[in-house]
Image (cartoon, rainbow, N blue to C red; front, side):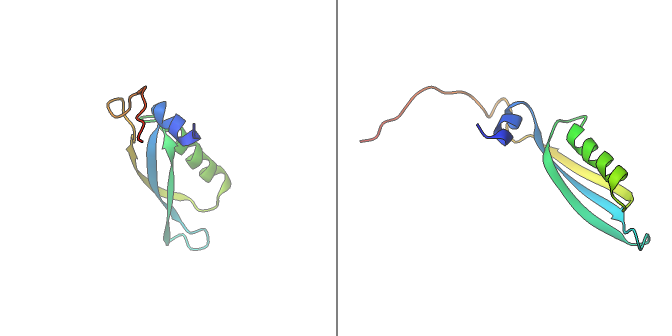
Length: 88
């Protein structure tokens, strides 16, 4: 099974974050970065890990982060079926 599908079946949803950060050489200017990954609400460990990396390793200081989260598969949308249709 594909890794992303496994995550979705374990409760992960798609998180998209719009990150505004200051340009290192021009702090008055803001730049946008879009980050997207599968993550677990409400704690968002993957996004927190990425933002920690950003603050520790990258030069552009964070201004703000806006995010949205959506579970793509929920318990009501997924069910295991056993059966087979044979045509011709």
